[in-house]
Length: 433
Ligand SMILES: Nc1ncnc2c1ncn2[C@@H]1O[C@H](COP(=O)(O)OP(=O)(O)OP(=O)(O)O)[C@@H](O)[C@H]1O
Ligand SMILES: [Mg+2]
Image (cartoon, rainbow, N blue to C red; front, side):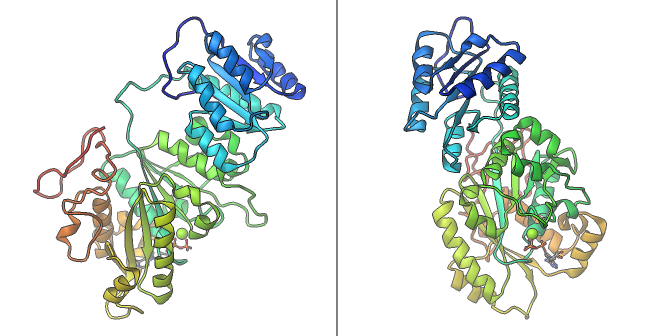
């Protein structure tokens, strides 16, 4: 468990297990033997026995604990935390199939949660991962890199959410040389990989089908590299069969990306919000892409209000895409009035640039960098990074004067090397951790 627990001493065993039923005990003992660990350290008994035992002896490197007999697993895990020494990697198992519990357990420092009845393959994988986590070099204090997660949501189909997500990911990775991930959660029809002329591979589909496989190594293998600093995880899942998931895989992917990258842009189809609201619970900035139509105004209102309730911690940016002078269903002013906020950035309609980008297999921001659309994308990316002052733009409202959307509001440290200043102004306020 990686929770900030008290420092321990003494010789540690490689492994202890506390399991409630004979089937699980036999299964674990078999695997423990394969791994060369002492089988007598796999005990019958649940979490309570684990707490008792660990209060008397040094904690093992890896601890497997069965929560089946626990009435309040989260609370009991906390009592385990009080007796367990830092560095111990804990895998829990139980019969409750609930994504919220799963999420809370991970947040409390558990490495993985396996659903019972246990399968030998899953336990083997989980123990191998736990061991490699234990052996992996720990980051030096103060060496952690801040992570920023930016879901991009389109208010209607085809408004250009994927165009914006891919362009922002490209700009984040190329301008600031920040290690950037693009997670395309449109698993059946996503265009993230296509926009960068890449094959999506099976990574995301595998993750959804087998959430317990998701870990750092999995991410490394499953992600497709677009450049040294940009990697993408997407899928073209078969449309002949539905993907059965409770959403835990998506959440776990976000968790892993958080540890592995400085920025994650999530192409988040709006239908996913309805199914899996927890996907925005840890978002730092949410980019809502809309257009000047009646239907989009209605859904912008609904989505903004939903975000207020479900992602109160995040900053919002509202982007109007495909804007054409004189032929909007709703004028900008009326649109802003009806959504009760200003549009942060307007992206002009430019079919030529969009077509050229598709033909070249490059993002609009890259292939159309000289165009007005490309420049507006750049402005959006700078605005997101707090490099330009939204107050200087009459139409903008993203933040307060000096607007450093990510770095100031999110208390984020600048990556090593710093950012390039684009104005002659003083450095925006930055809060270091
Ligand atoms: N500013 C623009 N000007 C012209 N065409 C654009 C612009 N932005 C996006 N497009 C084009 O609009 C189409 C839809 O864009 P995109 O796939 O990004 O939308 P989306 O919101 O992700 O759609 P979906 O609902 O299918 O996920 C694409 O062909 C894209 O090239
Ligand atoms: Mg899309």
